[in-house]
Image 1 (cartoon, chains in turn yellow, purple):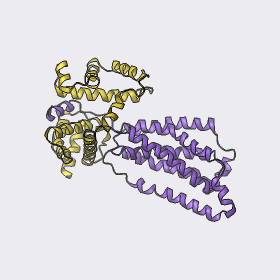
Image 2: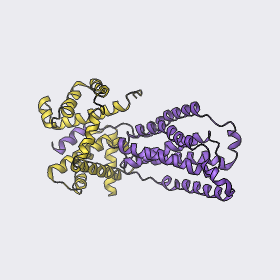
Image 3: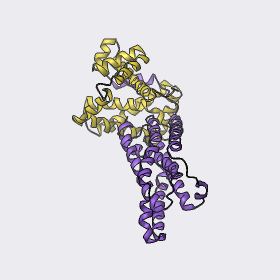
Image 4: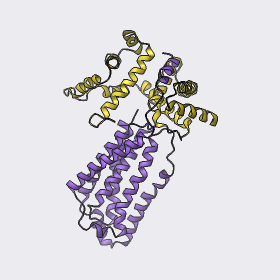
Length: 181
Length: 213
């Protein structure tokens, strides 16, 4: 356990300095362990793989919350548990949760067009391809595979691009009035 | 999509944002939110004229120091809570000394106050100012903190929001206490605490709503 912690910590430290190979090794080694965590909460085959990929995306998006002095395994497992519980609850939670999700996409007051205008303004500020992907996946509701076929990209590339664009939009919305760093 | 493909995609982007941004953003949020709160305080209330003299009494000083200590202990807890897998550590134990201290002050004041004056001092004359102002003054700080903590990854968003609420309420109450002339712990150890609890509850609701990721 400590060996694993040291090894993963070392890989992630190197990744932080821009070492893509170390990062690939890190992700490849944690994936089977996290798969066990995800499977422990139920689900089968494809479903487990879907959730695992969401967990990996969450680890990627939140990797700045790990400090190099901290042990890496508690950090990793805490994220995996939180995301797994969250995703399973969202998928199995019935009708209540999808409405919650929609609330973040739809403007609260249908008469108020500011939110929609903000969205298109923000989409204008990210690159064109990313904006197209957000429109296709987020607004038209295409699957990653369908959007990939349209733009001539692999399904994986679409997923990553969509995730990054959403992060970017979220950050923009958060810092809309503040000066950007 | 195969997981190996996703890993290959993610590995193309190894370097993260520097790990200290959470602390820096939280610091900036406290400065910005705190500045708004101070301006609100100066415009709406202002410090009591006899502040210097009043603070020489330890029982009056406690009115300012205890909420300040609450904010200073809740802040590291909120920062740790925003990093997955980090234990809350010492502040999580020390912070319980504060409710104990306010109960002790309350009990002490109850014993030392003449029975006929207890009710008047307990009710005081400013509850309708005290409660709304503590909540109002905490709002700018809470908003800043929630915005900054979104950068983190709290695995318990409700608790994280409550901790942000405690920080905001502690600072707001310390500032408010320099206006308030009700110096009996019968008053402040009851109504300040209630104000802080309300602001903390608002923080918890905000956390559950805005700090999920």
